[in-house]
Amino acid sequence: MTRTRTLAGVTVVLGCLTLSACTDLQVPDYNNPSLQDLQDNPTPTKIAAAAQGLLVGTRAGMSAPNGYISLLGILGRESYNFDAADPRFVTEMLEGELNGGSPAFGGNLWGAPYRNIRNANILLTAVPQVTALSDAEKAGVAGFAKTVQALDLLNVINTRDAYGAPTDVDIAPNADPAPIATKAEVFAQIVSLLDDAKTDLQAAGTAFAFGLSDGFAGFDTPAAFLQFNRALRARVAVYNGDFSGALTALGESFVSTSASLDLGVHHVYSTRSGDVTNGLFDPTAADLLAHPSLQTDAQLQADGVTRDQRFLDKVLPLAEARTVRGITTQLGFKIYAANTSPVPIIRNEELILLRAEANIGLNTVGSNTAALADINVVRTTSGGLATIALVDWLAMTPDERLTELLYNKRYSLLFEGGHRWIDLRRYGRLTQLPLDLPAHRRNDKFPFPAAECDARVPKPSSGCT
Image 1 (spheres, one colour):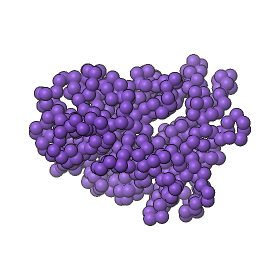
Image 2: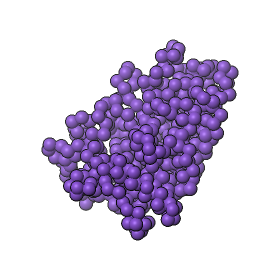
Image 3: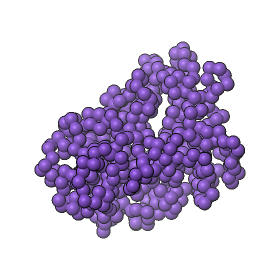
Image 4: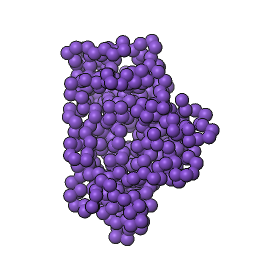
């Protein structure tokens, strides 16, 4: 467990992540450069390596069996983990209160994003010292680093929600821990980072001074990366109920009803030495299983028999049912077909649904009409479902329109990033999550890690278990 105040001493994490540009970088020890050397003697090569290392850091823990996607999937009744070696995937995640003293569960999803934010701050401090970089290249590094920081901080607040989280990671190791900022203050910091990054990226010229992973194919220039930045900004605006702001950001993003729904930015994995594989790959459905409600809740296609195509494409029926601690399912996943399958950070399909969500939130005849057009694109293209008639859509209540929107987000973004848990919490609908057994509970947020609580005198009034 990593206290926020200890982050000043971490080592910058670097790695290639299948970067074609890595072959052009001459670094004596690519994976373990000296942090002090980066701070005291930064060069274009070291800056490039550190920038690429932020991609390693922001990917950390996302696809692990007990990582962000898996744990949030369990809480959102998308998935189970029936790992026989660790019953806490059931006893803590479904039966009991999340425990901040267990760094693999309730106290998880904390240290890695803060380490990466700190590493980005070190990079941002070093960049101005490099005279061999042009002003445009320096702006590109800054815009990239701030966008990654915003993404990391968003993942933190998605797990801690109303408990809040620290936003100041530039605390000396011997200083008092950073204060816990409120949820609103954390989101304000995220917005500030994304908007500052936009300004930097607009001044960054036509190319970055470093390479990006294959997961950024098509988004590896400052102008294209800015579209990714604006996509994240739209997600944040929707989370904050800023629907007009979301539509503005979406207009600057890569949202398109004529492009592939899979267009977007992804975490990538490989079997190359020093890299990691996608831990969500479970070809025999040994541990990572799907919640049975995915089948019962799936809408039917026009024939009245075939279920939503998204369910058919993503969920794998098992030959035999699996039961652990009274929970039974006969479903696995086939979303990640290999241990090198990419994991989406944000895709066009989500952006189309975010635009629909923003328009539903505005709740005018024109905005609701626009929302239906986007929902019908996703329903037909991704789900194989019939379109909803405009007259029927406008006759719905706002709550009914939101229900349809959330249904589509559930199946379109299934097991990609805890979206269902986050969305139902935002709209006060967590009680809609099924309880497999009467003794189960619906956890709504993660506590702070125990070390984070112990470092503070007095302890925070909430968030410490």
